[in-house]
Every structure is written in C-alpha cells, then in structure tokens.
Length: 333
Image (cartoon, rainbow, N blue to C red):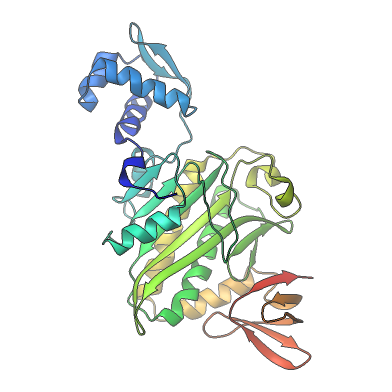
C-alpha cells in the first residue's frame, strides 16, 4: 500500500479531542468548537462522527453540544507533544489512524528531507514489518507502532548500536511504567516476557560508504492485545496479557520517546556510551552469555553464547570455534 500525505490524520480531530479534554466537566457547543478550529458547525458534526467511528466516546449532538465520556488512549500529537516537551521529537509528531508501515513512511519522508526527530505513529498498520520477510501483527489501537528518524554522524558499521540502544529504551520505558516487571532483551531486536515476544525493533538506514545519511528506528510493542492470530499464540504476548492490567498507550509511548531521546543524546555526547550500551544490553539479556542457541543462517549452527563484540554482534562458541553472528534468527534452546 502506498501511503501519501492525504492519509495522515486530520489535525482537526486532535484539536477537538484536546478542546474536549480541556473542558472535561462541561459541554462544549458546536459553535465554540467550530470557532476554535476554524470551521463550520456542520463540519464539526462530521468530525465528531469520524471520532466516534474511531472509538472515541463522545456524548451529545449538535443541539446540545459535546462532551468526552473518557479521555481517549490515542497517540495524537496534541496529546503526546506536551508529554515529550524538550525532546527532539516534540515538534515533529505525525499520526495516522491507518497506514501501510510506519517504517516505510519514515524512510520515504527521511529521503525527502524530513528533519531529525520526525516520528510516525499509527493506530493500525496494514503491512507492519519485522526483520527480514517477517510481518508485524498490528491490531488497531492496541499496540504502539512508532518509527523515528535520526541523522547521526556515524559510519554505517555502528548502526547495530542504535538497535541495541532502542531495545534499552523500550526496556526502561516499560519498567518506568510498570516497576518490577521482568522483561528480557533478546539479541538483536526483540523484547520478551516469560519467553514470549512483546516488542520488536526494526532499524533501517540510507548510507554512503563512510557515513549514515539517515536512519529509522521502528518500534512495535504489543500493549493491550488480548488475542493473537493462531500462528502467533505460542510465541507472542502483550503487556496486558502478562500483567493483567490495561496500559495507557499514551503514557508508555511518551516514556518510550523520552527514553529514546536520552539514549540518543548520550550516544552523541558521551565517548563511553557505546561500551555502556553493550554492557547494559548484556545485563538485561538472559541469552547473550552462557545460553545455548541455534542460529538459522548459512545452513545453521549451534553453540553457547559468549557475549557481544565491540560492534554489538553476538559471539557464539561452536564446535568449530568462536563465531561472530552478524545476522540471522537466533533461537534460544
């Protein structure tokens, strides 16, 4: 599916949600809303109907005015921007109710000059992607589907560090939102709860031989899903399934973006950040050291993990000696 600017969420929808949220205890007339967003009362009615169709619980009608029954858990820029103020993302949030892939859109926009810190968020993906040919199941308004544009001054060989740092950012955001939850980092781009995957990270870049032009980090988090397709039930889970609690996607997404911002600034400003990322990743991963794994690449191989090398690649001790794994699916045994 080719996604164009015309599929982006109408900014007026976010403005209505923000206005109704700011007047939660009173009924806002159609006239007041129309004046605030610069449109007609009939257009306000059409927009309210569109919000209702998207699951936003708005009471009232044109004659009496409108009121939110509950603040919607939608990842709208108007809701998120105040929560991520001071980060590189605050002024470049783009929201879609439905999109092919946030990573595809972010790479397209980056190639056309989108500024660093541009973030592409979707309530639903029709063609969500994981590593390789894998798809990412993207139930509507149940997960976080988010891709961010970066323009770091670094060689392409260091791109893996970005993926590892993004994994740490998700880990920190989850623990900030739900302290004490034990989530596990699986090299290079997954996060697990009780051995099942709840988050995947997809890093893509456009580069020259010696420098990165732009890099996109995509994060998919299963937040409030309660069921999965049959082929995923044994391997996938969600934060709600593991904790028994409904999560605020807005709160978690804000925590994620702030954590990503911290990791990125540290990576740019601290000469020791790369070593720290490798050390912290291994500390939060049960599989990078001393774990028997099978690597599905070039015919497959088996061995015991022996940590990460200086570039973040996985080292595996096999019967033939120490091997460095650059890519491929790593299956824990």
